Image (cartoon, rainbow, N blue to C red; front, top):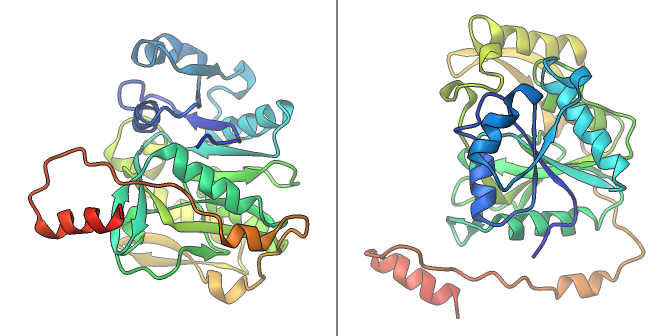
Length: 290
């Protein structure tokens, strides 16, 4: 399965540790690596066969917001209805199946989310939940009308854009939800993400000192009707009661055969890559591939 929408990975200062680019290359995913001009030779050294987009000078050195909006415009200019934006600190995509979170080929996971998203008229943003937030016994294939972070499929023809220096992804989701568009965060497919503070480059400096308090307060100031600043995980943290405020439903397209979709199956097979010692895992794989 090949994704139909362009995939962008924005990166800065992580030419030797751009996790997302590494696993996309391993999975044979076609993507753009978006960087600033002064780092071109460094990234080219580590990713010689990757298609690299160099930001124009007016968008360089001004933070991730300008980069993300440039990516959005680049996608529109190339005639696409949606585009993917991935952070550069993602190491793996997994699939939740029968209580196990299994490493999954990226092309397959991305394509399935695209198929789902395109079946509805009012999905503005969809994407992957974090593996750390999806328990093995999770019963919901996706969460409706909540935050979508780090691996986002964005509808191009919308009046909204990236704008806040802090919590920009939450702000973008709130922009679309406030106008009754939907967001979908998938649990069926999830991403392993390295936390920003554990990696050099990127936006790490923004989180130092009282950065987290500034982040939460800026979002609360922008959306006082939805956001409150709380104390979680021994640090300031914004809080949004997503289920309380956003209850609108998905709207199905009327020009497709929904009965046909119900019977559609994706060919996803398990592939053994290491020796298996656990008898329960051996049994699981045998039953999975029947």
